[in-house]
Image 1 (cartoon, rainbow over the protein chains, first blue to last red):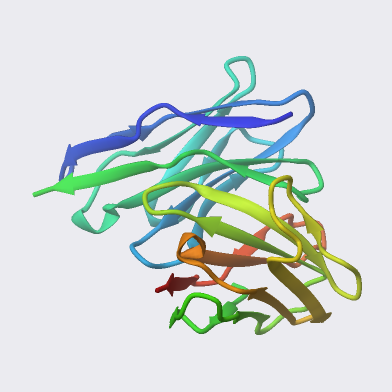
Image 2: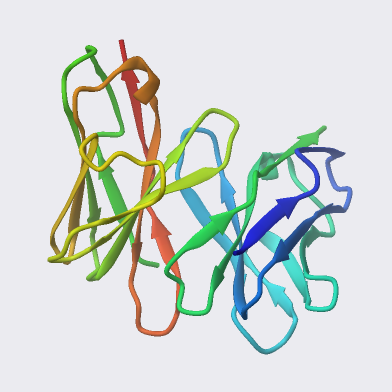
Length: 113
Length: 116
């Protein structure tokens, strides 16, 4: 069985500061990994995904994530955040073939002026 | 990118009534659609997987007779909450899987259901 753990439920950070949102997963098979962002009362928007290849993945809005197989982690980073990055961020995993996605509990990123 | 719509975006209904939520893939054909439920400040929980032309596969603990799913075409799936009760109030989100090797789900904007 697969699972996803987002280690921080909330992350407050000042504008223009760097941020890292942590995600660890467990799976007995190869996985695909995703980060999604959700703004209030909206659906999910894909930030980035890791399917294979380079372990450093770049996404939209200046976000990037690094897949670390030995540590089973897929942490999301941004070097300088904006107020508009305030949202809920979900890490997700599914087995290769993508027919059952498991989501983490989410991390609320709150960017302060 | 591919667009998925949901209708309605929000609905308020009386206890005991049924509510239908539509999920449409606007610019691609979706062989598979997923229905999720999200409680306030919580993550998405997969309710069921819907394949065009066949019966939906429900996750453990999800009542099939309570949440009726119909995937009548490659661009439309519907979720009907039958005999809704206040505990069914939630945010329902669908996603559509395009396939073709990209393994990406495209999410709808969600439907806020409030049962009085």
